[in-house]
Image 1 (cartoon, rainbow, N blue to C red):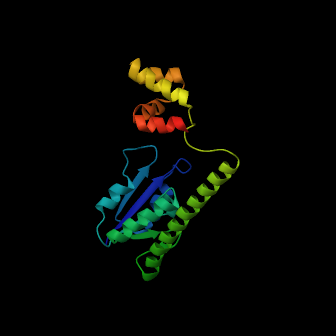
Image 2 (cartoon, rainbow, N blue to C red):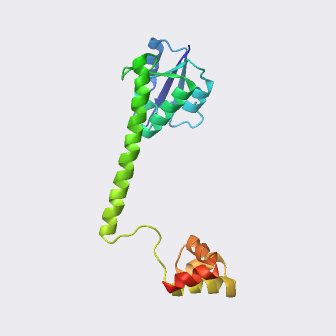
Image 3 (cartoon, one colour):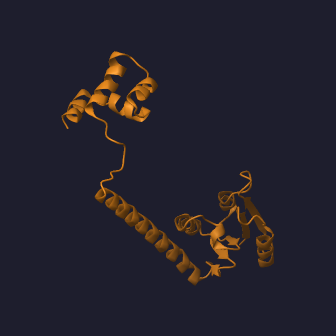
Length: 191
């Protein structure tokens, strides 16, 4: 079993030395440094690709591994599937034992809870916006503008860019109404 050390510096913590010292004292055989300022630096994925079953990744602090609970949970699933272990020195996490296996399950439950809460907050926000009369999505355009878009494209052979500017709509909106069939346009104009 190899111990791979992982250091990630951030904009608020650019000095890797404290992490390096902790990982060396723990006995890491290889230590990798990912620097937010240097895209060419070793990434976490590069390290995980080198690891083999039974190896452990050692970090000084858990937040060095991910930017969100969801990202961390996804990483833990990868650890489980590859049979890697995680050791976090400051947070006293070591998945090499039976209690560590519970940590993987706990992280998965936390990620599921975070997804559920995010979905609930999003739906609640949309509901409140609708109650205030605000509706998301593209603004509706009137039938006259739809007809003008189609006329300029099919009859006058104008460019999409010109049509969008003339009708004061987005290029995507122009494409949307140009590609609708005649029956879809008829239905739309009846509304």
